[in-house]
Amino acid sequence: MQSCCINNFDRDLNFGGCGDADEGFLYILADDEELKGRLEGKINGTISCTEEEHQKAVENYEFFNDPVIHPKVLLEIERRKAQNTEILKSYDLSI
Image 1 (cartoon, helix red, strand yellow):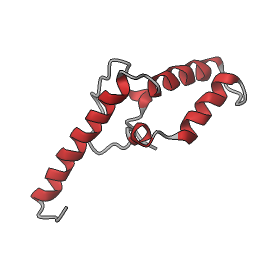
Image 2 (image 1 turned 90 degrees about the vertical axis):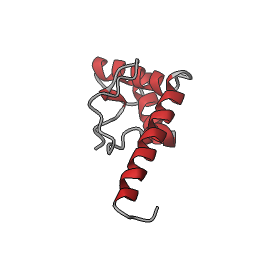
Image 3 (image 1 turned 90 degrees about the horizontal axis):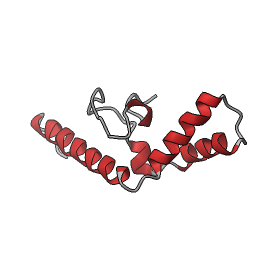
Image 4 (image 1 turned 30 degrees about the horizontal axis):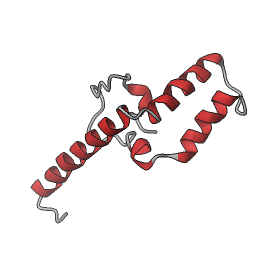
């Protein structure tokens, strides 16, 4: 289970507390249709959930589809990729 998922930072993209090795951002990079489908199911009522789960699904769905936030997350993924690649190269690994 990814610890750096969309539940762990706010709409202002506070990346604090998300280590560079966390993979939760890959949901956004991959444009995860399965996750979006589950969120849509909770929103439209085809998946039963509590009111709190429904509200969280609405927030998360909006996050995935926000045209301002999405590019910022992609930039953060690229930054982390570059940083991690440099770390691996420092260990004399061929990348």
